[in-house]
Length: 372
Image 1 (cartoon, rainbow, N blue to C red):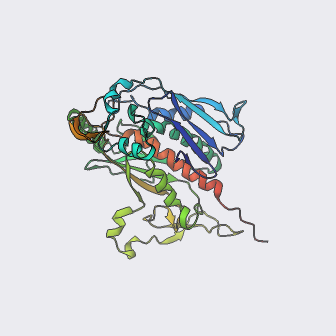
Image 2: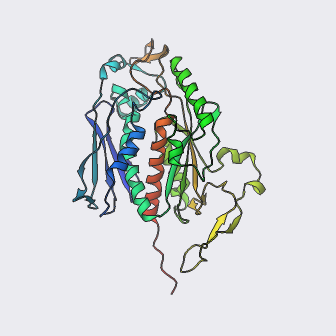
Image 3: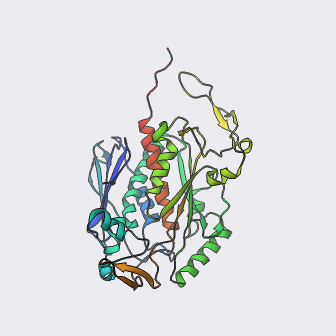
């Protein structure tokens, strides 16, 4: 029913925003991995609510309980199950939503799909579900760092409304991203973004924007032809996120305004890289990276570059027209605790999904025989 992601590294999430808790079951975690749970918690803290004045005030510790898959401090290779108990649940704010459909929410479509729906905080459609994805992505990151020396995955808020940051994807760091509450490493623009989000919140409205991510240290040769292309799977992962409405790889839509002579990424020798031998790819690089590190659906060794567009949060605190479950028109104004902008908390979520895709593709890579 759409709760599982991945092939060789499979993640199944479960739970609702106002249920007893949420969790994840991870299949394909290599045995013998000593997971650094403090680092996992750091990723969860970057996503959790109540972390700054730019986010919802809901207070959740988001501390994972390990139910299976660990023994004597290392992974066993069997299913790793994690549970996050909900601690700050107030469903009373949603009592008046039981008999109506909120505009641009999943209320009507879930009812159309299943015939029933959990109206408390959006139920399964709530962005709270992403706590499980972030935990899974944090574990995937640790496996990738062990397997691929030099692996890095850094995301940041690239735009809020019409404000756009100037960030170098080759050098941007986690520390620079986390230096501001809005998670934009361009300090001058970050302050403007924070002010804009504050203005929107005072107006009882919401605003959207773009999160960009750079994945560095990915070798050439990851991805499968045709349907399971690396860029297709990255797009699949990104578009499965709450409020995501668009994905760009590399130059994205801006590439449509270029000519091929300017857009093509010329190959050049990669300094210090060995020549092709024993079935390995030659030591090549590209002068530019309009392709976003992917050509023909397969990584070429350059940084993977992706941008994910997030719409404004659907919950606004202004009167809105809608209909009741019996089809009768009505007007309502939302109550409760909600983000005026999802972008700051979306940064670790986008990173998590990128790590899950890259690890899954790394584990799926074909074994090649050495040339005799």
